[in-house]
Length: 444
Image (cartoon, rainbow, N blue to C red; front, side, top):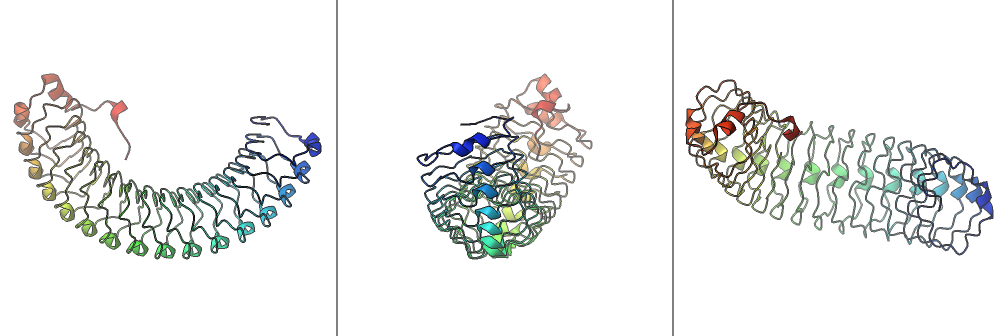
């Protein structure tokens, strides 16, 4: 109704509006950036309203919502994004008596309410009919205490993705220990970028057996060092594990993952990328990754990782993307474990061992079938200890299109005659030792 009225400050005339028969209030004041005072809404009859989605979304200047204190929202089903990006909103006490028992959609309700630190008002909310809680508190940078949510019944919830993502002040989630998330199928990014989160014991008894998406769940939780609580999680239905623990820079022990059944997993993209303290991956020894097709950046930036024997029997035969898988593993000197890997379906090997500064022996790659490979760009770039590449002399790279920077900055490499057998042009051979096109450089 007043969508995108950026300069709207005074809504005094709306106090005469008869709202008794209105059932849809969605996006009514969306992106009214200048709206400060909503006192005139105090006596609105919204009792027939079932859709409040995005009603005040993007009202950056709105800090006082006391006027909504006595609103009857008992027929409301859709509360998603209602106060999203109300960055000045710090006090929601006026919502404490709201009856949201018919609510189904709560996603992004308080998304990016960056000043919100106190949510005690939500303590007695009945959210038992809620299905979607994704992004509900995402980006609430000041939120550090969520004790009031301990008795929430979220048993019907199926989507918890991004629920607390970006809550950088949140360190204690003990209150979630009794949450019934058994119907949840999407847990992606649930605690992503919770920089202060160090203790996740509360999740120990969570039933996540219906979950299929765990991608980014703890990504960027740089204070998280102990994940023992996840030991008995049943992730057998999981398909998406991409960047689940990426940039958990304090994480050094993953023994608790040894019994995880990841046999349905397809995407392992960057699962442990940036885990700079991780040196032991023995827990992954018996993982069945046979359905995995994308291993992009799985261990990239694991600068403490020196031993990968544990993954020597991995069946990666369905893998098509191995790009950056070990890039930045600066302590990795021995890759014998990869000797029997079947990478015959692989088409992207770009930057696979890039910046493996200690890597000097690549004999394990001698019998690799890379005949389907299309992209070899930067594969060994900056492997400054690599002096011998004889193991690659019989590689069939006839389908390759991208070779730029493949051996760029391999300072110890002196003999490249072994590459004469490769079916590539002189120009392509020359490009292998040049700095790659910056447009094709990717981040971890």
